[in-house]
Amino acid sequence: MSDPQRVAIVGTGARAQMYTRALAERDHTRVVALSDVNPTRARLHNRILTDEHGRAPATFWHPDDVARMLDAERVDTLVVCTVDAQHARHILTGLEAGRRVVTEKPMVTTAGQARRVLDAADRTGGDLAVAFNYRFNPLHRAVRDLLAAGAIGRVLSVHFEWLLDVRHGADYFRRWHRDRASSGGLAVHKSGHHFDLVNWWLDAAPVTVYGAGRLAFYGERNGVRHGLRRDYARAHGSPEAAGDPFALHLDADPELRALYLDAEPDDGYVRDRNVFAGGISIEDDMALVVTYDTGATMTYHLTAYAPWEGYRVAFNGTGGRLELDVTESGWAEPGGAHAHLDAASHRLRVRPLWEPPRDVEVAVESGGHGGGDRRLLAALFDPDAPGRETLATPRDGVNALLTGLAANRSFTTGMPVPVADLL
Ligand SMILES: NC(=O)c1ccc[n+]([C@@H]2O[C@H](COP(=O)([O-])OP(=O)(O)OC[C@H]3O[C@@H](n4cnc5c(N)ncnc54)[C@H](O)[C@@H]3O)[C@@H](O)[C@H]2O)c1
Image (cartoon, rainbow, N blue to C red; front, side, top):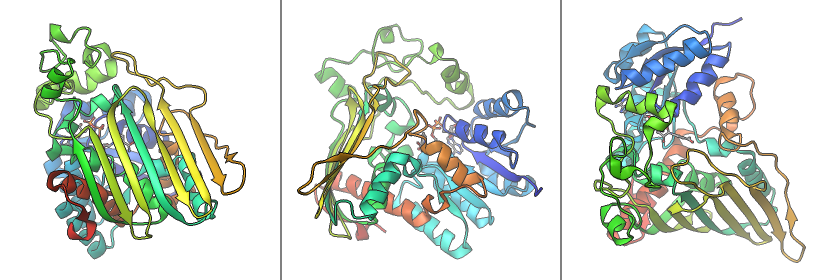
């Protein structure tokens, strides 16, 4: 048997746990090194390795020492799972060292970072996979296959609405995402899901983006205006947060407590800010009009304060219309940690011209992005698994980002933005 693939993870927060567990479960992979600004969070990953899986612990490295870590631990693959704005730095370190790199979404957050990563990937011929997991959801695969097979002819336009609810959507206004410098705003943070899907479905790249986006619901002033604000900075230790349906109580959830509350002395990061307090520099409501190089257009709306979570996307083609409706959570309960799903959580319907509509049955798993995460992990780490061709390339990573970056620019200028101006 060949030697196991030696993997390091930089950014050992919530999402990275999926990688740590998946890599520990496999005989042909080893997590050999962990890196984070926060050693307490990294230690929790070591506990996953040792206590849950009986594996050896990984060594710990400060993010400034990732290049040394790659050599010292003979790392084959570097998984980048830090806050979004830090991805580029670690991707570049991995590529320059000639290692395989897997990065979480979005690939990077600025045009300058995108240029540097594309240059490095071209120059080094390096292997950089962008973990756009929604491509691996069987429903999304079915949409792509139907469109490619001409089920509705040539696609002329797309109408796409995405709702984030007051549980999961609100979380972006408590965490580091609320700071544009860390996340790029939701147009960038979500670009690796929503805009990549459209590019992939249509086999297209964006050309121009016009948008109106604003902080309409969360934030201090909105909270006062809407009569929703309670006066506290963070929920933990604040009597005013008791009974606030928007408050997240870290000490009520053992995992959140261990990952964030107990880790605060290391880096001072606060995970439970008041969504109606100041300091938010991102939008929660955005409307876009996008044109594509195939000639198609898209109207898109993201709402981050909805009562339910999911999306509706419709494709209008020369031979009919294809509609996908997905409920990811039917409603949100105050302070709730879990999604509530109805039995029928999705419907994929083809409506050919002059014919009765037909529903397309697709088996979808609950959780893990409809089974997308499991398939993504197999494509990334299992040599003979299907789906490698579905992995996003650096160019795909940039094309997804460009819609988000152009949207952000349009929000401030009020003008349509040619995507070619950005790079
Ligand atoms: N594909 C998906 O469906 C999905 C889902 C969740 C998160 N993500 C992505 O995963 C990444 C991590 O998100 P998360 O939810 O785990 O957040 P998190 O806050 O739980 O974890 C982020 C980690 O990065 C660390 N970090 C901060 N600055 C760093 C630096 N300079 N160098 C190294 N590490 C640093 C933090 O200490 C923290 O441990 C993000 O890029 C996010 O977009 C993807």
